[in-house]
Image (tube, rainbow, N blue to C red; front, side, top):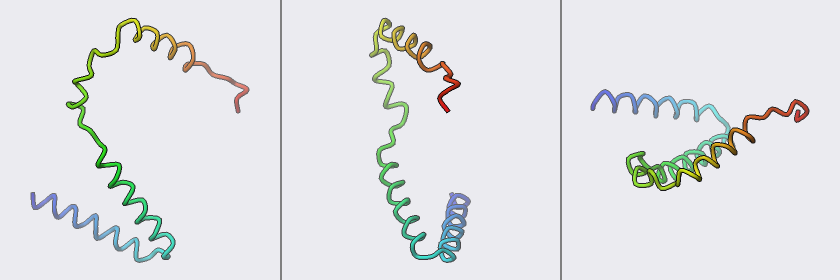
Length: 81
């Protein structure tokens, strides 16, 4: 546990050192990014909670989805770029 805390302290220290070298405008962007990361982390869901949905898509729908992926997503349009 202490090793993990030491690693976290090291990361925080490094981030602070880098931030101190940045202009205020970039520091603000980093802070905004941190807020967005925290917000997104609150929405994470472990895979074990998704198991309740296993098997909820019918086999027929899965076949249609796979066919559509095969037909539409694996094409290369050489003129696209």
